Length: 377
Ligand SMILES: NC(=O)c1ccc[n+]([C@@H]2O[C@H](COP(=O)([O-])OP(=O)(O)OC[C@H]3O[C@@H](n4cnc5c(N)ncnc54)[C@H](O)[C@@H]3O)[C@@H](O)[C@H]2O)c1
Ligand SMILES: O=c1ccn([C@@H]2O[C@H](COP(=O)(O)OP(=O)(O)O[C@H]3OC[C@@H](O)[C@H](O)[C@H]3O)[C@@H](O)[C@H]2O)c(=O)[nH]1
Image (tube, rainbow, N blue to C red):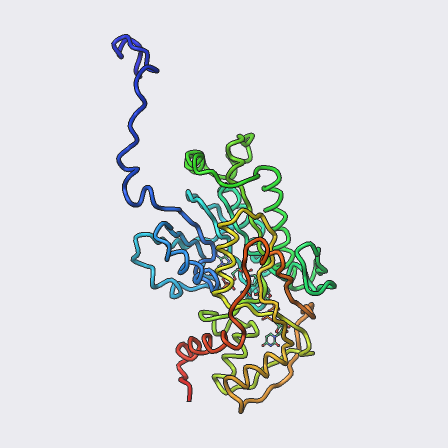
């Protein structure tokens, strides 16, 4: 240890401050904004990664357990020096130092989220806690399902919803509601305002000290508060290329059925409505929210509203006019209507969707035909 004596009697404080390391000027040191995308191997996540990778200042880390996602969706980035892929289940803590988190990990198709309901709710609750404990700016992709079977139409962000807490969909919609609560409790308790880059050293220190136990056992210093600008976004039904062909959601089901010459299965009564947003519009909205100063929640979705029968007619007309439309049993608690009020997104983010359903379906059809292996006749 340097003493006054070993310093030749000089007071250490009279020394000039050390020069910053020359590494600070190195390309990757100064340029990169480290961004974690949980669920980045999934449908929306992989499109988000593509967009984030376009910015040379971003280093993108994906954490995914591949339950509904696939490495194939990220193949184009495997050897890229600004990209990392980690097989990781977010119900377990993850030690990474990042500046921003897009927190998407969660099965989104009703078939898959009901398959292991306990795991789904753990992903939403424990997984979100684990991500919040990284003390970074974080954006949660919540869902229009938090409005349940809505009694307010179209849905505004201040509507509290009409959700069955013990139904088969609860693992997802109640799970996301708890995730939203956690986001806002962390925000109120530990965080206000924007991320300040000058405090990055504290983020680094955290991962050495280990995450949640350390975090829970100390009084969070004021500087930590700057990191926790949590943003919450309620996503409405999204569609586009790279959806799992057997995903089970309505647009992917109808497209795959139409391409395979199978009848379109409209679940009863067929008059229930949804609003469909093309994935590129969705990704644009997510990035705008993260880059802006708003906390949310903010609805992101396309307000164009269709009954499922109308959707089936549209797909039939555009892809395969010869196929039949049949009615099949529905599942419990299916919301009867859903349409976002996007006034807040327009005013605060300058965002609104630009791709109409009629323009988005052919883009998705092209991708599905390639993967199913049935070209257009
Ligand atoms: N697509 C939509 O219409 C829609 C609508 C509302 C909200 N959202 C939300 O957007 C997000 C992405 O949806 P998507 O349509 O891309 O779904 P997706 O199923 O294609 O992607 C989810 C990804 O999360 C991963 N994942 C699931 N559980 C995980 C866990 N425990 N640990 C790590 N990774 C895990 C999956 O493997 C997958 O890659 C989800 O949070 C979903 O709730 C989607
Ligand atoms: O083959 C099908 C599949 C679904 N449907 C109907 O289509 C409607 C939409 O069903 P989906 O399974 O695509 O999606 P849901 O709107 O029920 O849930 C979705 O909501 C938003 C997101 O959080 C999730 O992506 C998903 O949970 C429902 O009314 C369903 O009954 C059909 O008519 N036929």
